[in-house]
Length: 405
Length: 151
Image (tube, rainbow over all chains, first blue to last red; front, side, top):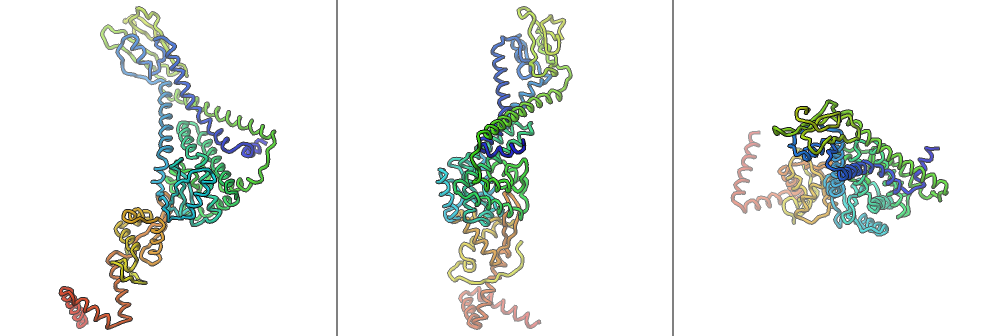
């Protein structure tokens, strides 16, 4: 029953919506980081200089500044500090991936795959067909490129004015007529759907959620949905779903005659190209199998109006998928934090501020055991005290120099 | 990669300069580009990028010309798996000098076969117009004659 419901999920909700539902949970780590930073910022505003936040990132400076001490070298690393570093690294990686794929992806892919832009004399019928289908989709006609790959392949790059559809020599040799028109409409549907941007965002979110194994699967499931969406949209524009199904089967057969592409080529295709045919379809690939796509296209015309009860079931199932995804993301964020705590050394850690002869000293116990609670220490007598003393892990008190730690 | 094989000329255009007479202007330019590219086989795209520096040309024109040169036996090719996919790479079957000798010999042999002494007279008169060429021809004839006597 559940399996059937899951399989029929596709029939009830739009594929665009489902691809979004699959990607939304990947935003959780970003949201968690932002919320945690905001919370700590608000906390720091609300508290007077009471030496809160003794994580190594900021706790070192706060007491030193407050008591007019000189800063000593940091001798320990707290989990919250490591979490912050990991968060910053993950966010930076995500931002780098986004910039690389969104801003420079098109240029990089053109160079990496040796795309030659078609001149007026190159395949004029193909270029004319691109213009016709573009106008039907309400798109500005994109540039048309060519790669000398003998394997049948087609993909789209970029967005807006920089959008480019690229065909391989192999594809132009294998397909003609309405099959070629169907592939053209599929590629243009990718541009219309903004899949280049969607892919760049998904890749960035996956980079941020690198610790979450489910993120790779949901990202690939989302990209498969986008692929099916482009199939459906492209086929509906030209009104011949069977032509695209036939083209897909033909391409799938032709691909089997060629040796598999190099790993680097596959990686570059998976990162930068939208809709490039993948010889190996798996749970982690960004392409559904040819068979699944062909069946989906052939069933397009037979899809009837869905009863309300089923729509309600689909909405419920979608909510469950969304909540499950968010819960899984949160679980992996917590798991990552927990693992960091286990991995960090538990030895007593302390850092001392005392370099002037009569300067007070500050000792801080290890708070490696503290989980998600920022260790804090407060002076017992902040008015006249000259020195802080270790009291218990994560806490200090003020005392005389003779009894300092 | 250029082997010691011969090139059989199917037609010769009197208006063409150098190899253009045998291969046409674009064919000759493409063959020159392939020779200049060194030992490594080249892709159509690499040749296209080079040729378009001097001439406005379509990629497919270069592709079909290289395909024609392959059919004629001027270029050889194989399928190679590389950066960005699987594609043809081309290399010349003959080096520049070998190609020249082979092509000219084929044309002269054909002329001799059809016109015999007329061709000899024409060649001698052509050579005689230049003193140095005439001396070189005399030496060549003497050398060939002496080697015949020894044999």
